[in-house]
Length: 126
Image (cartoon, rainbow, N blue to C red):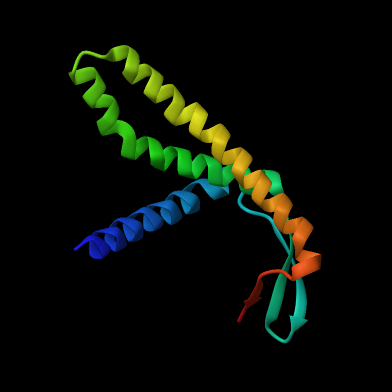
């Protein structure tokens, strides 16, 4: 039963991420990729701009994480722990955003550094 539940939760979470990205990207700016042509319809991601990618993905994941954490925040208020609720809210929004922003910056810098050495992601576009 666990694999089915994990699949459903992952599917729902990924769908919500995509919807939220599609909603926010026109307002904030989306991910910026530079491509180079390999052959015919095959293109390689040559470079990823770190800050636009990190910003939009950190915002999207933070908002979605906050939405899933509302029940936890309500629970802290319900059991009479408003200080824990406020602390959890601050870490869950500000802390999570900072951590995700830094992680995405590091990932793009590493990709941009290693792409010439090991090759980049190739996409077939029609």
